[in-house]
Length: 100
Image (cartoon, rainbow, N blue to C red; front, side, top):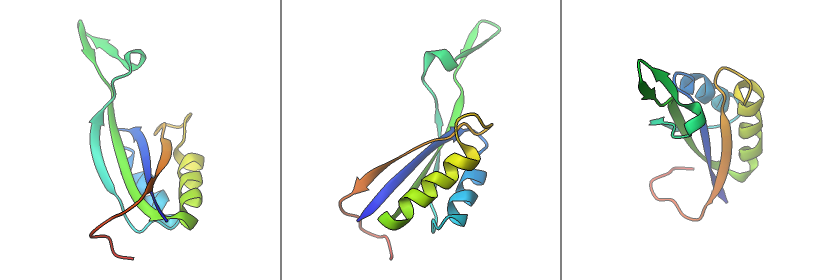
């Protein structure tokens, strides 16, 4: 079975997180730029609320590589680091267009 790993990190850290994932066995991934919506993360500048920018890394991988990739990302880029990456995974029931 395949799994989708989602790694959400601070903007600008995605390339480093993806490099770590590849070192742990990921073949590739997709990076999406996003904006956080948690109120406590909001910053105020000249009376304007600024939401922090985020990057989302999506990696589809086999079950055997899921834990090593997630653990490697968490160890190098997890909460408490500059990247502040949170990772989780979801099972993928079916996928078209992905080679083995």
